[in-house]
Figure 1 (spheres, helix red, strand yellow):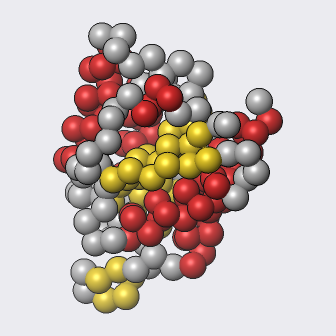
Figure 2 (spheres, one colour):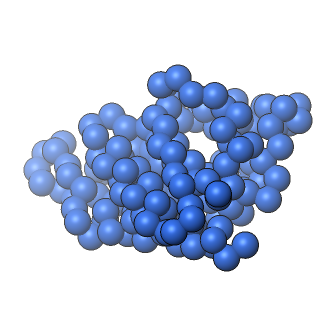
Length: 160
């Protein structure tokens, strides 16, 4: 059965909501399963090799993914360079949340995934909903875009 792995970091809970919506969208496609992992919690990096699709998400810190997400992606890049991770024929996607940095976080995630050799299938999802000074929430439209992202990637896997 094809597997989609969603790896995310979250500080305020916004990106976690997005990650859960992405995984929900992927799982909505018959014959495709999804796994959800937060950076910083124990899971083997070898799941990247076992996955058919990899989707990553992060909140923005000054326009960049979190330090933990950058460390995870750098570790994957180093392991790929030493041939300990293969990451052959993987597809994937990226998503991110931001409050004030314009959503540039998805550009950094996209570049990192392309460096790993992951073919990004659909569009990136970047979302914010301002509620007041330094308080944000992800709205229903953004969560639907996340479900659509997960579903699009899972449908691509189901075709193969």
